[in-house]
Amino acid sequence: MNTEKSRCLLIVEDDPALQKQIKWSLDKFESATASDRESALVQLRRHAPSVVTMDLGLPPDPDSVSEGFKLLEQILAIDPDTKVIVLTGQNDQANALRAVALGAYDFFAKPFEPELLSLTIDRAFRLVELQRENRRLRELQQPDALKGLISRDPEMMRICRTIEKVASSNATVMLLGESGTGKEVLARGLHQSSGRRAEKFVAINCAAIPENLLESELFGYEKGAFTGAAKTTLGKIELASGGTLMLDEIGDLPVSLQAKLLRFLQERTIERVGGRHEIPVDVRIVCATHQDLKVLSKEGRFREDLYYRLAEIVINIPPLRSRIGDAALLAHAFVKRFSQEQNRSSMTLSEGAIRAVEAHNWPGNIRELENCVKRATIMADGNYISSEDIGLAPADGAAVEESLDLRAARDAAEKKTIIAALGRVDGNIVKAAELLGVSRPTLYDLMHRLGLK
Image (cartoon, rainbow, N blue to C red; front, side, top):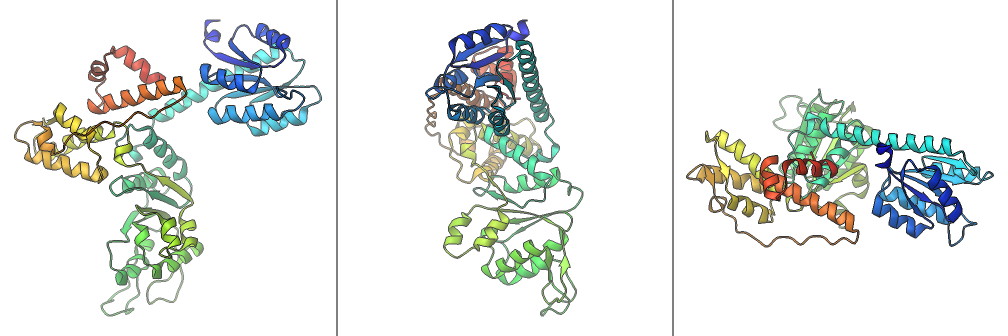
C-alpha cells in the first residue's frame, strides 16, 4: 500500500459525483483531481503525475471532445512518458481510438469496472517505472564510442543520445557549430557507434586544400590524368568505402565541385579525374561547418539542393560558453593529460584558476581552452596552476534564466548548480557536497532525482 501511495494519479472529470466515485474506487493511489483543462494543467505541473485518467468531454463544452483532445496533446507535450487513460461513453469508440492514435495509453468505456481500471492504472505505473529504469541503465551503459567527449551539460547529453540514435542508419549527418566545439569528436563517435566501425573513418578539410587539388583529393585520379599523375590514386571517398567520410568545413567547398558531390550523393557512384568508368561507393557522409549554409545558399555560394541532401540529420553543437560546468571539467582533464606529457603528474588548478576558467567567454571554444591549459602546464613554476598562469581575467557571472514554473525553475537551478560544482571539483562527490553545503547522501539523492550521474 505504501508503494502505491507514492505514485501520483491525476483524475480529470467534470462531473463532481463521478469524480468523487473514481477517486474513492482508486483510493490505493495518491490522487489529485481536476474538472477542466486549465485546472488539469495546473495539477500536472504541481504533481507531475505519471498516470492520468480523463474524460474527453470537458468544460466549457462538455458535449464536445475538443477540450479533451487539446488537453491530451498538452499533457503529452509536457511529458511524453505520461500514461493517459481516456474514459469515454459506450458508443464513442471512434474518439477512443483517435485518442490512442494521438498517444493515449488505453481507454475505458463508462460505466467501467473499478477493478479493471485499477489493474490498468497499476500496469501503466509499472510501465513508467520500467521505462525510467531502462533509461537509467542506458545512461550508465553509454558506449565507449563517445569516450572522447567530456561533458556534463544537459544539451550535450541530448546530442550524445541523438548521435547514438542515428548511428545505426545511413542518414547523412550535418554537424553545425563554432570552430573548436568538438565536431570531429562527435563525427568519430558516430562512426564508432555505427555498424561501420570496423571500416575506415576518413576526414578531409575542404578549406585546407587548394581548389585545383581538392577534386583529385576527393574523387581520386587515373594514371596520366594530368602532369605528375604517375599512377592511379584513390580519392578520399573511395578510401572510405564501407566506412565513414567526414567533410569538414563543407561550407568552403568550391561551387565547381558541389555539383559533382551532389551527383555522388544521388547516384552513389564516382568517376576519378581522367577516368571514364563509374565506380560504386558505399560510404556514410558526415559533414561539418561553422558557417550558416542557408545564408550561403541565398548568396549563391552553396547549392540549395546540395544543402538538403546533406542536411538529413542536423545537429547543432553549443559553444563552450553555453555548456554548464564544462569549462572547469575540461580544464581538469587537460591538466591531467598535459601534466603527464610534461612528466609533472601532480599538477592541479588553483581555486583562482578555476574561477578564471569559469568566467572566461572562450570564443575559441575547447581548442582555445586546450591551448591555454597546455601553455599553463608548461609555464607554471610549481604544481599549482594559478590564475596568472592561465592568463585570464575574471568576468561577471551570467544571469539565471527566468522561469514561471516554480518547481521546474527550482529543479533547473539545483541541476545547474550541482553540475557546476561537480565540474569545479573534477567530479569529486565529497568535495562537491562540501562546496554545496550538503551531506554526501543528500547530494547523491539530489543527483538521482535530477537524473545526474
